[in-house]
Length: 245
Length: 282
Image (cartoon, rainbow over all chains, first blue to last red; front, side, top):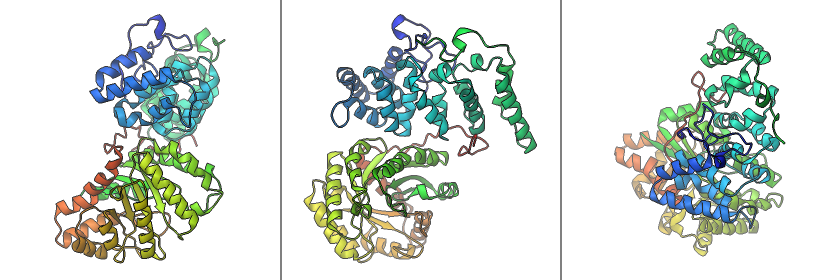
């Protein structure tokens, strides 16, 4: 789904990792929009019944976070978000429920492993808002092992941009080219690709393989290859795990 | 001709089948959870299977423009295996998921006490979760099995009007219809129903509450049997509206009882040379 790109940043709209949210040019998923803005936008788009459901779901999640009973009420709300809000709004609704429940890595891992593909995608979108460090990387790695392009795309949001190591990130970019996931889905692509000679080599090899098989080379490959040639990586935040405590 | 196959096991089918089904007019389907041929030995095996029905398989279907839903249950055959029974405790967390449109397949295989318990337990789960139930009728001793099934349904908290009894034939259709249940017919190459007998039953009993499925799985079966029944209905004088009622509106009405049908396919997925079921990077 598409959310308007947030153009302003206030202290309470920072992501959990301290990065001001909404600054990414790929800011078109709930991973890129500060939760407060996400809620305002979603509320404006929902019909009356869905809006009432969302308000109640978020109140319940805030009042009863954590694990309780056979299944926590906020996890029930996650499961039913699609039929309550409609598929187009389910990702945003689910991210907001997880945010309201202040879900930590353990809770997100449970929700992911017990979730449908749609719920798993929403967890991936929620990571930058809820997990400050690299603890949730196994979820990203799990999603990148799938061949579900919706999960692969969601896995490569701001959380992966910040935390995924170079080897896995390069393979993820290559997998996008293999499976037709637009590289526009890859958060922070230009910064991470810049000066990455190994990625450039992998791209060139893939292009050669395609050409040898008399197949076309994806346009996105040329775009990423151009990005690798645009200079050395920027210091500091460009280094995965570099700024987390 | 728009077709909703209300019972087909796509996990066992290929992408060629999806493509052929779409070409034939299939735009929606329900995949009931069932036996895999090879017996399961633990609840973990069920979990992976249920997760596939809620993850990978809907994705695959969407690539071919088909809306995928599923039903979740412990099937009758494996209800007899004590190693599998604990999965009953895990069903509630699956029954709340989007796109789970019924509890099923439940019912009888060999009509054992263990099957009695699993059937009654799962009818109660359906009632508790606001879901209808897809009830398989046994292959052996079918009429007795149907009668016992309907007795258990009547004793349950789930109204018979929220039950689809499946795999019916000439010997069971009348009692099933008299009960008020929805009527499911599986059309197979050699066993169960065939197209001509199906059309004859439609003429005798009418299209009301009748659903026709291919029940295609890993055995000898044909995912295009729904279309073949529709074609024969037209050839034998049924109207396009009759066909639409049996092959689309009836399944939509039955599974719509769940409130969870989502028939718009927005695959919205990346495709690569027209096919995104790729082995990318592998």
